[in-house]
Image (cartoon, rainbow, N blue to C red; front, side, top):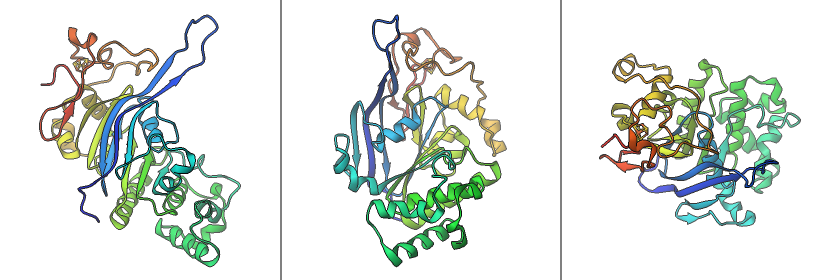
Amino acid sequence: MPVASETLVEVKNLKKHFTLTKGFFSKKANVLKAVDDVSFSIKKGETFGLVGESGCGKSTTGRTLLKLYEPTSGHILFDNNPIENLKHKEMLPFRKKMQMIFQDPYASLDPRMTVADIIGDPLDVHRIAKGKERIDRINELIELVGLKSDHLNRYPHEFSGGQRQRIGIARALAVEPEFIVCDEPISALDVSIQAQVVNMLEELQEKFGLTYLFISHDLAMVRYLSHKIGVMYLGSLVEVAEANELYTNMQHPYTKALLSASLLPDPDMAEKSERIRLKGDIPSPVNPPSGCAFRTRCPYAVGACSEEKPQLKDIGNGHQVACHVVT
Ligand code: SF4
């Protein structure tokens, strides 16, 4: 595993806004601010866990970072190269280095293709291998993810959810990427299979020095894989810290509420952590509350919370929190 010191991926003030179709009676179109001024960096060989409820913008962040969505503004640096303005052709060398593993392994695999064709497809697209070399590489990849060569002539529907996710991982690894966005890769799987996939991702990271953005709604789950964690609420990061620092010294009321909503495998942690129950649903990002977007659900809200949006500030140890009552 490489010495984890250099930054591989960095986003600065990233925004992704979607303009919604204008309604018949409305004078102007609404804007959905899915990602609104997000900044973080990921060191080579490390995992950045991005956590939040569904609809908070974490998947859009991952997709925008890979330029599957064009950013509205902000900067994306891959190995110090700015990629935010690159056109399709200019992005090709970076596409090879930046891959994605999807949440729903079944939906992300073409049901008409055999496993061999699914894994071989990126080899063809990026012209990496042909003939025997291609076949050898496909065999190597299927074994790497714990499946057998016998599986290569089968179709996705013949596999379990966990096996399908392994096929998705083999496909992502085919081009020898440096960075993988893992978009809720275990949330559609049985609990018993989740740990196997997480362990495999960890082993692959060790073996190939991979860098991950690991997206999840479950704060307890990302603990085991992440070196650093960012907690996202309604398009913005509200707390960022090294994993250990976050779990032993979490500050933001939303982070505490998210942890309360997780199944805590560690009874000590369950006992120590302050339980905050999340009330209601996440507000619409089209019409977010004024000031702090979490104020409509926060038990600690004070007057200033409705007036001014709190900015991330460093409280020591590189631990950043965006909350008016945390000093
Ligand atoms: Fe709660 Fe106010 Fe802090 Fe927002 S800024 S999390 S509303 S206390």
